Amino acid sequence: AKSDIMMKDMAESKRINKVISEKVRGQEADPNQLLSLDKISCTILSKAFWPITENSSAEKFKLPDKLAGSISNFQDYYTSQKQNRSLEYYHNLGVVTLTLEFENDTLQLQVTPIQAAIISFFDDRDEGITAEELANELEMTVRELKLRISFWVGKGIIQEVRSKAARPNLMGNENIIVYKAAKTLDKSAFSDESSGVSISQDKGRPGETSEDVKLYEGLVSTMLNTAGPKSLSQIHFLLKTKYITEKAYGRSEQETYEMLDAMVKRGTLIYNGEIYSLDK
Image (cartoon, rainbow, N blue to C red; front, side):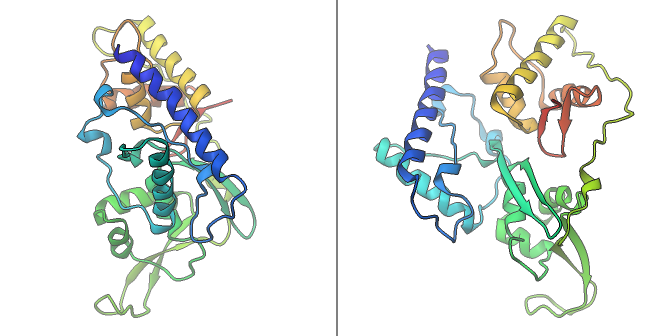
């Protein structure tokens, strides 16, 4: 049965991750890579049995070399376990736990892979980089880059700086806006923004009862409690595939967002601009 294959995929993923982690444990870390293999955990799905579509990988970008090498190494170890099989990665469905070090503090947070890819370019980097240069490195549009980097700018971790220094690959040297990493952490940017917010209730969609709404919110809470923080696209994907009930989850991603937003405003969930987690 389809559900049996899906459950088998989850169990096999845990086994393979454990085998690879044990194989590389104790090995000297590659200084050119930000991730060691024992820090990577992949959920490996049989494509024919999961509702994976073009939209599942809609957020396409190039991983920086310091991250791509680790993923390539994982592929090599996987091939040694599963010969004649290959992996197709859906980076936008992942979660990355980062530790950022500042002159005055250390910050740990969970973000999406594109957010991790963006911030990785500022690791030990003193000079600024323009939106055009960064978008080119990630092979994404400038518009999409500016949308994604706004998360870091909003938290004060990346700063927009006006520079008049001439850049050899840019025309002229006036009014150049570059991005630079902040040296110190502004803790106020991570304060609880949900205090004082009035209670919000998800009214559901046509055809749903109040019990359906409670069920879906309960599934979200269970998901985040057992599997950790998730992005909107991940939660929506899992509600449609893994957390299956007698009544199929028929909401659109926008309707899923509205449900999560109501849970945030009630104080059930915390949202950092990219990832939802339980307010424990």
